Length: 513
Ligand code: NDP
Image 1 (cartoon, protein in one colour):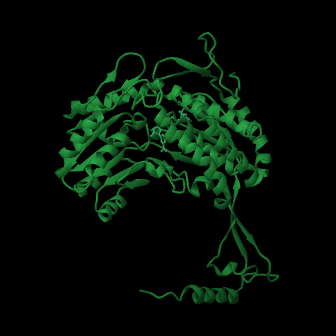
Image 2 (image 1 turned 180 degrees about the horizontal axis):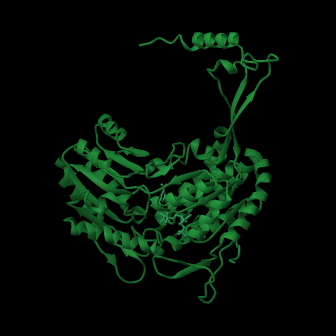
Image 3 (image 1 turned 180 degrees about the vertical axis):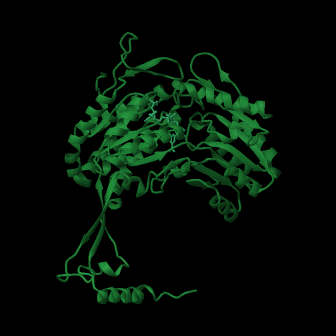
C-alpha cells in the first residue's frame, strides 16, 4: 500500500517510489509523490471526517482568520509558489503570476469576507395559505468531507481554488490533484498548516485516475474539474452512492469578430487568449468567426502578432518567453492530430504547425485558415496553442456556427456597436460571454462561472459557488397554532368543501387573459 504523505517526497538518486513529476519544459524529474490506492484514500477521508466538526465549530470568523492568513502567505511566498507551478507545468512566470497567484490571493480574501453573507440564514415568505404565520428559513450547513479532483492546467487556480470555498463553508477537504502536477497542492497544504488550519482538515490524495475514483466513494460531495470524458465517469461513479457532483468540464470557446470591431484590439485579444498558458485554458479562444469585410485585416494582424511570440523554456525567468511548454504528454498528440486533420481537409497553416524537437515538450503557436466544421480543430477541444480562423458572411452565420458545438463554456463577441454586440452575446449558448473581452469574467468571483451543455453542471464563484458545498435545510417554526389544523384527520365532507372554497378564494382571483 502506498504511504500517506502530506509533503512532497523528493526523488532519491533518481529512484522514484511513486509518481515521478516531470518538468515539461526540460524533461527533468522535479519530484515524486505516492500513488495512493483505495485503502489509503479511505484512511485519508476518515482523518478528514474526524477533524471536520471542530473546524466547523470555529464559525465563520475563526475559519476566515485562517483564510486571511493564507492570503498573506500566498503573497509572501509568491516566488516559491510560482517556481513550483512553473516547474511542474512548464508555463511562463507571467501566466503563473496572473492566472494563479492573482486568483488565489483574491479568492482567500473573497471567501473569508463573503462566506458569512452567502451562507447566512434567509427568511422566506410563502404564498401558501397553509403556512401563514409560520417562520420559514432557508439555511446552509456544511456537508462534511468534500472531495476535489482537479486538472493539470492550473494546479493552484483549478485544483486548489475550489477547496477555498469548501473550507470556508466549514467542510474538511481531500484534494486529488492531477498526477502530472501534484506539487503545488502539496505546497498549499504546507501553506494552510502554517496559517493555523487544524490538522487533517485539508489533505492531499496524490495519485492517478484510480485514486480519484476511490475518492468519489468516500466523500460527501465531489467537485470535479477536467475533461468532459472523465466528468461523465465521475458522475456515473457518484451515482452509486448518490454523492452530489459539481462538474467544470471542457470547452471549445468561439470568438466572433463583427465588421465594426476594433480590429487591433480583437487581434491582440485573439492571440493572447488563445496562446496564453500555451492555449491550455478551459476558456481559451479555440475558434474564431470573422465577418467577411474585416477578415483579411484581422488575419493579417493575428499572423504578425503570432509570429512575434517567443516560445521556450521559461526557467530564464519573467520576460524570457511568451509561450511555455505543453504540460500533459498526450495533449501534444491531440494538438498534432487536430492540425494534421485540418490540413488533410484543406486548411492552410499561416504560422507554426509543428511540434518542436529537442528537450522539453513544445508545439509552435499556430494559426490556421480555410477551416470549417468538418475539421476537428473547429469542433473538438484542442487545448493547445492553435487558432483556427473562419470567414463568415454575417453575424447570423457566426452565431449558428458558435452554437454548433456540444460545448458551451465561454465565448466572446467583438464589435463597437455595443447594443448589437451584446444582443449577439446573449444568443451564444455558453455559461459566460464577454463583449470586447475574453476570459476576464473568471476573475470576477462575484459572478457565477459554469458551463452550459457538455461543459459542466453547477458553477463556481458567487453565492452558488459556496452553497454547493452545503446541505440546504428548510426550517419551519410554528409558534401560534390551534390544537388541530383544519386539514387534519378526520376527513369530513364539510371541511373538504370549506378548503376547496378557500383555495378558490385565494388562488382563483388572478385575472384570466
Ligand atoms: P482529466 O479529465 O483527464 O483529469 C482531471 C482529473 O481527474 C485528474 O486529476 C485525473 O487524474 C482525474 N481522473 C482521471 N480519471 C478519473 C476517474 N475515472 N475518476 C476520478 N478522477 C479521475 O482532465 P485534464 O487533467 O486533462 O484537464 C484538462 C481538461 O480540464 C480540459 O478538458 C479542460 O477544458 C478542463 N478544464 C475545465 C475547467 C473548467 O472550469 N470548466 C478548468 C480547467 C480545465 P490524473 O491526471 O492523475 O489522471
